[in-house]
Length: 113
Image (tube, rainbow, N blue to C red; front, side, top):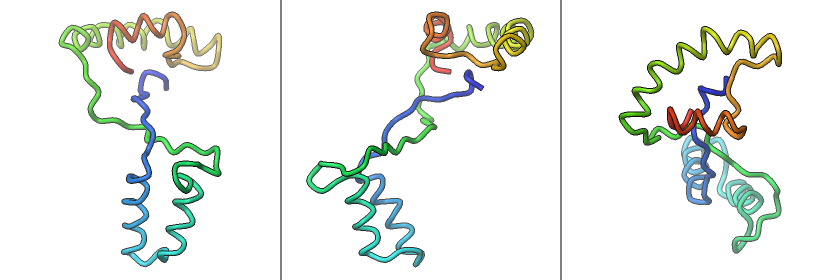
């Protein structure tokens, strides 16, 4: 659902190295495979051979003001009870599109959703 979505942020080469090092220490991959994966995803000297982007979907440090947290208390119940069922019947989705005009207004009211 859209209102459950968190901020996105892209992984750096260092983040990927750390995760691959954990796999290597468990014996799942060897050093050569790790190098090949890193070179393919991140590129050699900053030039990537791949169009892939690795993103983490969860950022635990989303900053909200006190007013945005208070607005969340009244906004989400109203959305879930009144708006989401109608939107689900009309479009097949009950969530909020954060890139629409309404989504941007809601994001200012309740912060990142």
